[in-house]
Length: 237
Image (cartoon, rainbow, N blue to C red):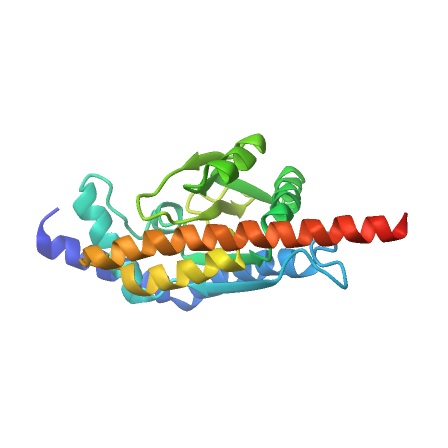
């Protein structure tokens, strides 16, 4: 595809994305995903719910344009068009689920699996976790979640889901699950490295150090809640 044709194609994709009907479809599925996490009784038991908070967004148009250009440069055979936009770009909707400590994660994972198995959602791809920590890697592998190491030490669990229908160009949603400690790291990294990575070697190294501190904080939070639980059980007995 020539440069003028490529530009024209990208503009048509952005036009489709911003179209009122497209935005309605996106927001409808976005609301349904958020509603699942907000209203699931297993994840919102009082006084101490499993889920601490939920963040969500639709992809910014300029970020989408930038992503299409980057993908074209990486693989100019795999062109994003109006016909395949929703199928190819699976993070147009983003939902981030935050929890306090790592031992809560298996409960969140189980409820997501149950919802998929009930037929409401379909996985677009297998769940994946990005982690550098060997202990947590073992935890995720025990849950049959494939793990991947990012050189930045990015840490999060990713699910990509779509409605259970036969639409050839389906709306997809990327769900990220992480602890509040991991969210701190993620927000700092995102500010510096998105949509383009920092060229500062010092920043990259400092982010790796911060990732290790974050892991220590998450592990300490696990220990605090475990100690509190053991103390409470002793008092009852």
